[in-house]
Length: 191
Image 1 (cartoon, rainbow, N blue to C red):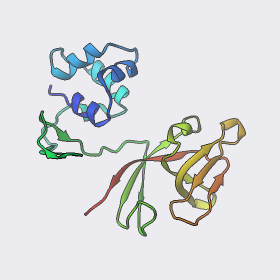
Image 2 (image 1 turned 90 degrees about the vertical axis):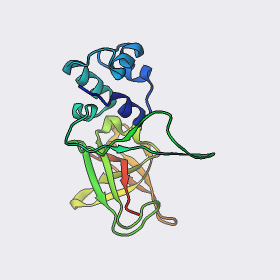
Image 3 (image 1 turned 120 degrees about the vertical axis):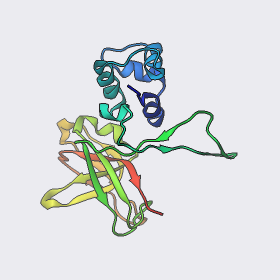
Image 4 (image 1 turned 30 degrees about the horizontal axis):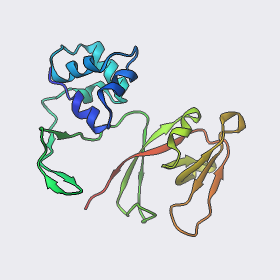
C-alpha cells in the first residue's frame, strides 16, 4: 500500500513529533517516520490512528488509482520561485461530516464574489480554538452571522461569542447561546 502520510502531515504543518503525540495512545516520532517512508508496514489500525491524529479520513492517507494527484512543480518563496527538493503533491479538499460551506455572492472583507468557503463546525467547548479566525455563527430564524471571532464566554454563561465585522464601519456582534460555530478551513477561489 502506498501511503500519503508525509504529504498530509506536511500539508497540516505538523512535525513527526506532533503527530506522534496526537496518536492515541501516543507513539514515537521515529515510528511515524518509519510508517511514512515504508520502512514499517502500515496496518489498518495504524492508518486509522494516524488519520485521527491528523484529523483526516483514512482514505486521504493512501494513494488511490482513481484519484489524480496534482504535482507540486514549484515553491514560491520570499527569494523567488524554485523547484521542490523532493516530489510533492497538492491534496484535494476532502469533505467530511463536520464541514459546512458558504458561497460568497457579494465581496466582503477578504472574500470576493464567487469564493467558496469551507468551514469546520465546532462545539461550544472548542470555541477558543477559533479565536482571531473567521467564523460562521447560526442565529434565530435561519439567519447567520459571519466575522472574526474576538472573544468567547464559557458554556455555563450561555456560550456567548463576540464577532468583529469584516467590513469597515460595521458594528461588532455579540451572540448568546450559539449552539455551534464553524471556523474557516479552506478558501476556494477561481482566478
